[in-house]
Length: 312
Image (cartoon, rainbow, N blue to C red; front, side):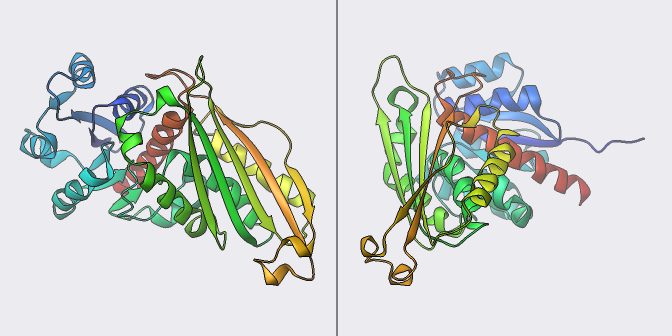
């Protein structure tokens, strides 16, 4: 029986996220064959590591990728740079028919969270992975919304300061805006808000996320079951993803909900979910769950997109 050839891929961005993704793809890629690592610093540890692992490399950015022998065989690119850089990369790659999975908050393509809406966007030329906080929390908002309408969804992502590199710090505004939009667009909440906290604690703490949802009074057991089932779906591709405790519920009186006149008669239900994400420590420390969930989600998307391309 003939098996289709694996889809060749490249990573742009030789920093922490790019390197962690590189190790994941080389160890666990099934439909994808990582062929190249691209950066802009000739002395970067990421490019040196990629060369030792036998990958083609260039420190000349996306132009270096396009000038490589065999560049025409690259069918999928993971962009692990910055929101600003990604816009330019997209302009150069799309006319060549290269599929792009964007790990920056540029939000050029549709927001995708694998456990929630990947099936709807397998043919999109550009897939945006939202943010680390979005990948961790939007599935939970969607799980609550599957049971009862979510009038307001708020997430708080707390990550170790040491796991926030220059790219993360430069994109803080984009993080909050992109995540809030995806809480609505993907999670299904009517309104959304996102907060990120860089925790300077020593030793560094693992990523913790809190999700608050405001609903009308609803079946609490059904919500708890839906959240637990969603957590299982996420942990299938992010093994360190887990609920820290049982889902918490608090009844809110109508007078406390002046901003939500539709709840004036019924009152409201506050649903609180607490999550921890432990990294797989492929390249980064285990506390860097914020980076691990991005690379794990991106690989999950890449594998499904590659399978789709093999069928074409």
